[in-house]
Length: 452
Image 1 (cartoon, rainbow, N blue to C red):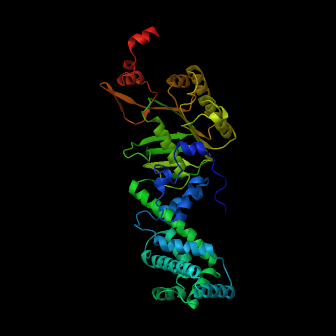
Image 2 (image 1 turned 120 degrees about the vertical axis):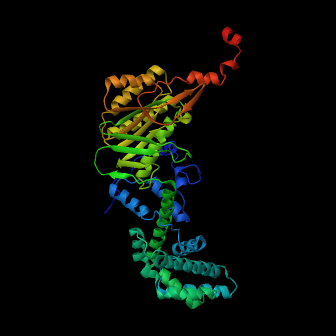
Image 3 (image 1 turned 30 degrees about the horizontal axis):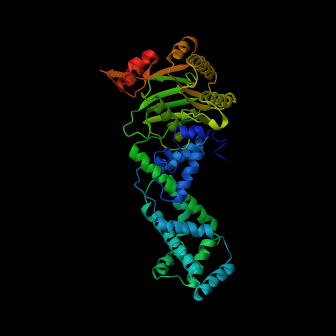
């Protein structure tokens, strides 16, 4: 049964806005979750980040698998050198008949006797270390995991322990300890790995990659005290967050939010530096992680399953196409509107809509877009703006909107930010005070300003 019925809809703008991807970016969400010890585990994590799930059962299954490892104090059971040797051997050598294999082994040995030892030594090293890896996995399955309650781990044991308790592997410990494998020994073990169970060994590698990945996420979840979202299987839009915070901040402050089909638009205001953008990114990151089946940085979360997710937070202009920032904004809104109007169930986050044009046009456009969003109850919207007058208009003319703001407080001549959501619309007017604090006007001689 295919659990991923449809593909999750998102785009590069969204993943860059939230800094989701990037194995080489130390501050990306990907890097936060990447505690893998194998290359295959890292590649699998990348695939998960690129392909969020759109099926509740698939999300909950992944949550269960990861959750069954939390608190078990387990580490990946194979040394990196040995595991990479096993990977390389299994992927490099295809299944083969015993007669053909004997010919291959004999040919390599003959070349080694003639002085061309590289191939023989390379294969022998891969085989020896690969067998060590299988012995480590076998001992872990029947030793360390004995008595541990985890359906996920028990399935691995049932699936692979009978294969790894083969008598050949029992002999391998003695043969490996004695040094280089003889032609007969090498033929036996290569036949074991490249015979009828070759595909099972391939699947073992894939399951080890997933185990490596899940052990790291379970460790992260325990260390950071993240939670698994409750997946609401209803068709209506729902998103609840409690104590949600940005995972990239060391001393982050948690906030709560609930959006649903009755109130499907959050109208967010507040001064610059008050925390609006960070909170919107927090919403987006928690939402995205929930569709990966991963734990989220919050004390509680509940969400229905969505078709996709789009943001517009750090939208650039496009010089190569001759687009101004404003025109890029217009095109972004148009593209997202087409997706929403197509009937998809989406989360949409817009930070400071239409800031590339004059205040009057921005006012009219922002209020118009906000009103239009309210008609699409299957989707949820988060909209921030500095034009607080839009909020006053919407309060009079529209229903189904939540109004919240990030406050900024005056302590003498200094501004202090609480980073805590409050009900209502911001009335902060601290911009000129900050400009004066920085002495901007003092940089310009008054006579020049008067004569200009």
